[in-house]
Amino acid sequence: MQQETGKQKITEEELPDAVKQSLKSDNLKDWQVSEVYKVAPDAQTPDARPTYEVRFTNAKQEQAVARFDEAGKPLASAE
Image (cartoon, rainbow, N blue to C red; front, top):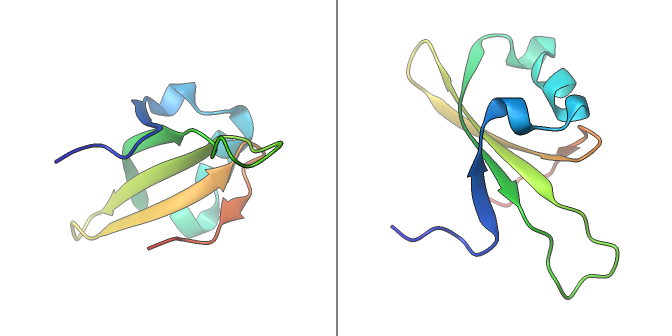
């Protein structure tokens, strides 16, 4: 399986502080972070910033994906 262009696996500790704070919200308290990716901005978009894709797993082994901007604001899912 090939990784998407511009998508780099990082650790939870490498996330911006604002994103870390968002992960502590009550909505996510039952979810464990399983993988984190930094997604490079589209080079064609001026002033674009990287986004962060966080994959979660809960106690029932269900999976979810959330995306955040550098300020920790959730982004609409592209999936």
